[in-house]
Image (cartoon, rainbow, N blue to C red; front, top):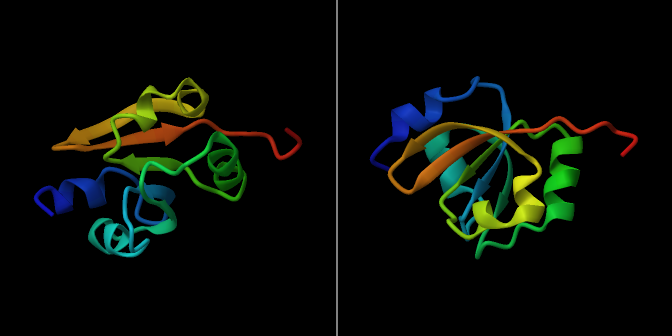
Length: 99
């Protein structure tokens, strides 16, 4: 991974993240040295993302151009933290456990 160090250091070391696209659900996490939830083939529904946020996900690492154009996903994105190559990192909006 070309920007391995930058991607690892972009968010706090212990932050939980959502990362993809990664068919293995492990390789991406290995390179960014993070824990959390993975997806592949742009298969991240708003419902899944909302649940991941409720469980503690704070950031989204994604190489999907289509996913970040989806208005139902965008509503959960707070700010773009970093863009390196094809990968973008977004801070996720906080969600109340009651919603």
